Amino acid sequence: MDWKTFQALLSGVNKYSTAFGRIWLSVVFVFRVMVYVVAAERVWGDEQKDFDCNTKQPGCANVCYDHYFPISHIRLWALQLIFVTCPSLIVVMHVAYRDERERKYRAKHGNKAKLYENTGKKHGGLWWTYLFSLFVKTGIEIAFLYILHKIYDSFYLPRLVKCEVTPCPNQVDCYIGHPTEKKVFTYFMVGASALCIVLNVCEIIYLVSKRVARIAQKMKRRERTLALHERYNKENSCSDCSTLPMSRLEKQSLKPQFPGHLQATLPAHIRASAPNLSSAA
Image (cartoon, rainbow, N blue to C red; front, side, top):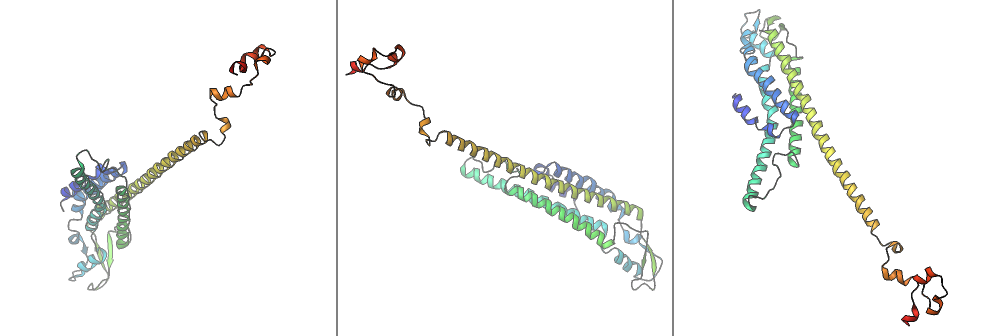
């Protein structure tokens, strides 16, 4: 397997990942891929030759090895790394699809036209694709941990196994090569896988809570806008027209009017405000 090509395919995932996603990718490459390539492959290099049984019966050692190790740890981890990183490629493909749509849209409507504000921003369908990839990665990690535990009955590797499978003549003792090293690397890879599961769950919680907070802010803004609109309508409605301000002519029409011969008998402050109707007549 060419791990450099594999790393190049996933190098673009960092552009569209959150902080948790970047940490997850670092854990995958540093603590899993690098350990797998540098150390684990050498420890499990040819474990079948190191599997030694205290019998010379032809085929007994091979059958016992196949019985206790139906799938090699190293090959199972290789499959796990391939499957667990494939969902990230779905996000890259979705962004590439958006880029292609953006290119066609600009070619049709001009270079200044925009179909997306940012093709790599996690909104709309890309948000759902990213969230789906996290659920798939988490499910794959859990499934492979369950398979590993189910096949070997636990994550612990014993030094000695007893085999009674045909064609062995009787119960024979078989010894695993480098049991301590294999046990250490098994626990390390299981712990790295568990850490990736925790990071995926944290990222799911982060994305969902951020989306819920954004929706809540939009609803608050909408309620505030509706409240201001209703208040404005109430203040400017004509349901009580008596409260509306009157013009200058309307105010003058409401003043008391007296004939000219009666104005002389009125007090000075009333006479000043009353119009002279005799001159108007």
